[in-house]
Amino acid sequence: MRALIHRSFGEPEDVLVLVDRPLPEPGPGQVRLRIVLSPIHNHDIWTIRGTYGVTPDLPAASGTEALGIVDALGEGVEGLGVGRRVATGGTFGAWAEYIVTDAAGLVPVPEGVPDEVAAQLISMPFSAISLLQFLDVKAGDWIVQNAANGAVGRMLAQLASARGVHVLGLVRRAGGVDELRAQGIGGVVATDQDDWRERALEITDGADVVAGVDSVGGAASGHVLSLLAENGTLVAFGAMDSPVMEINSGDVIFKQATVKGFWGSKVSATMDPATRGALFGELIQRVSDGTLTLPVAGVFDAADAADAVRASKAPGRVGKVLLRF
Image (cartoon, rainbow, N blue to C red; front, side, top):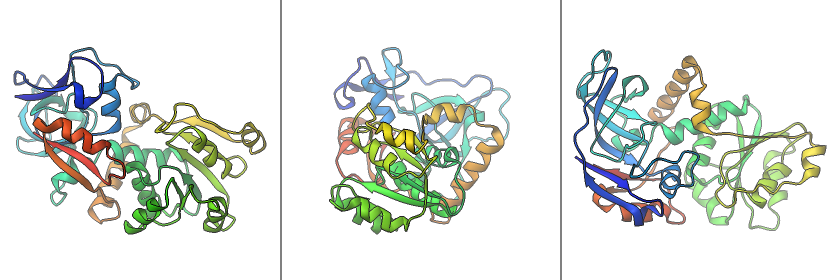
């Protein structure tokens, strides 16, 4: 079978190679999946660079999320049959024609959900809905997020709106406001405009902003914190620009603000099964009724992985880039 691996750390377009590997056999409690499509995520790129929270041994497999079709069952597997479409979001080595994974971690994909949507159903959407849950907000509350035109930012806005939570979005250029408006997402301000703070206050109409999400780092962290109300919570979700958060100590002190981090893998690992099931059910409902949209920027054969990574890194990209095996 074909599989994408890297023998050294570096930029994926430079170090990824397509190799032949033996067909894996499922063990007890496992299934073998024939991979249909797999998305390229930022954490996949960071892992290949060697800069993510988990560093694999070399030579290393790649990819973490995929849509697959059950191809073979290991001993003791129940509730899944050969030919069933399933999604996996936590299987390292997903960039391959076939993978073996634990049956218990798979999510059956309902009929009517397109392959391109199902392939990206778990990692980013589940991170977004888990983040929303983590913020502990209710209908009528206001939150603020930067990188509002990023993949998670778009999903968070759509999922929050469906729950009745208001979202103030920050983007770095005026064009981002128009892009989001075209997707039906409003309440967005471009921070490259001199009056962006005044515009933000107009959107919230003086309401308290109880929580903020920072996916950028640097000065952008301080922008989010500055908009929070007293006792507000700033959550670090990513570091797109800088690993250093530049925040004003006065804002932390006088707002009595809380600053904490969110790592989806850790949150997911400690989430109780009932909550996990409810959140996945909500995701599938939102995708099915069109509330949550998961656009695709392009689909590439695994042999063209370098071009796929370049497309994934392209500025202004809307939607995920998918690999086909």
